[in-house]
Image 1 (cartoon, rainbow, N blue to C red):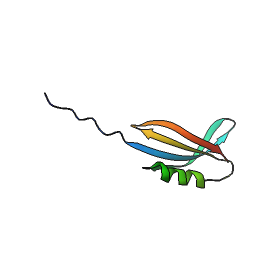
Image 2: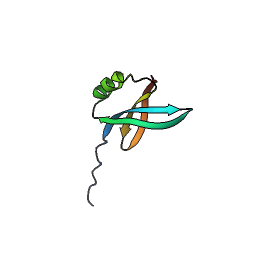
Image 3: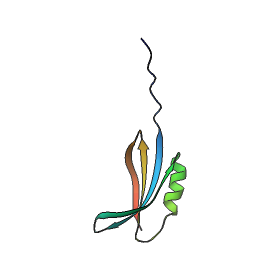
Length: 72
C-alpha cells in the first residue's frame, strides 16, 4: 500500500479595500495577498481613504476568515 502525503496547509493573508453603499458592496478597489501577517498588518494600517472599508483576512486552503476590518 502506497503512503499518501498530506499537503502542507498554505496560509495567506489578504487586505481588501472596498466601497460599500446602503449595506451593499459596490466595488472592490484592491485585493492584495501576503505570506506573513506582519506584512499584511502594515498595509492594513496604511489605508486611510475616506469612504472605504478595509478588511484583513486569512486564507487557509482556500477558506477565508475575516480577522478585522475598519471603516474610514
